[in-house]
Length: 149
Image (tube, rainbow, N blue to C red):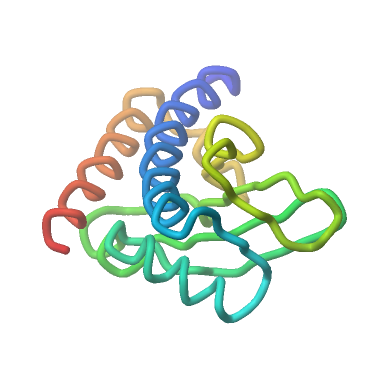
């Protein structure tokens, strides 16, 4: 499969998870009229609470002067239903240099992206049909995880 096609197919699932993740954060931001996230235990616990029912665990967080990155791991619920070849899901926020990110109602249309990380680029070596089937199984697994929780 050509690399461009691999990226195109992967972007579709990234868009799906982006919508899911942003909806969970949006609800929290609306209830609290904003949200401050940082690389700390409180943020770790909050993200676990927000995204746990979607089958994600916090794998880690990294921060520098211009970027805050949240790494999410597919939890056992996913791994027991299908093969998850991605290393993790990363959520990238634009950082204003304060080593934390303030989320408000305007932030959901800008400032952050969701990426499926394939650390070894192993998936671009499979056929397009296999890759499409794999992505569809991941999406179906998410729906099953949501129904169970």
